[in-house]
Length: 412
Image (cartoon, rainbow, N blue to C red):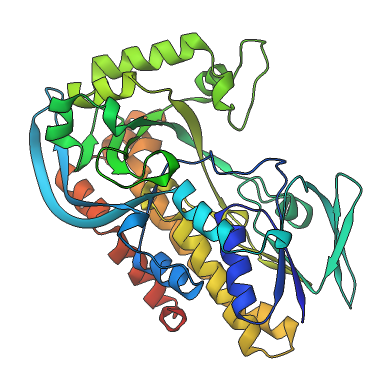
């Protein structure tokens, strides 16, 4: 059986491993962190393509996997619902999907503490060399190691993430900590707040231990705020004076930074959302996007966020990784023993798909990016609240249109 080395043990790597196993490969996943990733990640949107790939991987996507929301609404500054639209969305959580995918993989095929140093390859095999001095060989190496991919850095050093000009403040509050009156008003809804130049989303997700039972869920907030490079550097500087340029670990965010963003929440947001936000321990995510000009390098392929990073407005990071995984596995299966032909087909399909997904995310984030640009650019990027809510409510349709246009329907 041919062996695949999958670099990166998050959702993209796990999805690739499961689909490659289904296609007749023996995958081994190598995760750089020494500890399990179950405590990481927050809210996550689902789409039909993600659910279809999970089912192909043997994961039954049922009502315990997420929380359904029936309506998307806009709260004005006073807390009044002024726009509402029906929707049919299931909101899940990164940790919920991670756990089921991780548990379904044989323990010996998932290795922690394996930080990749470099890749070597020849006509017969590919070798991963790790920082701990160990090596591993296989027939294929899949770089699924995220936005700061070591695999991509080796083969495409010129392909760097581009800062979009804004950050997302993220937070989750246990359902039982949400005040009862606020819970009755908005907990079950997909809610927008839209301060001038900013955008906030709030919605229910699986709670601690991935529980979706009523009373044990969580309320997830994503608050996009334009932030210039100087302000970003300040936010990402810890109490010791060290600047974490690409994103500061949550425990290192200074108390004064947290106090400032909570004060802004009280001043700018609908009171229901502000009350939830100030009860949380928020953390910050600088928003980047990235496009790779190639995906295949001999026996090496890039997938998921290592290949393309779309801004989170599309809510499809896991879905894109799932589509990459299933297309890669099927292309290799359909090519028989011809690895070169299978990888060439994968790249032919997924390069335009990835570009389309990044373009869609940039379109949906254009208003936020424009806030740090000259006045004429800001004026050109006007915001239509009803259109914005409609776009978020139809994101699955938008992704489906890209899938169809790129001829990927046959993979689901």
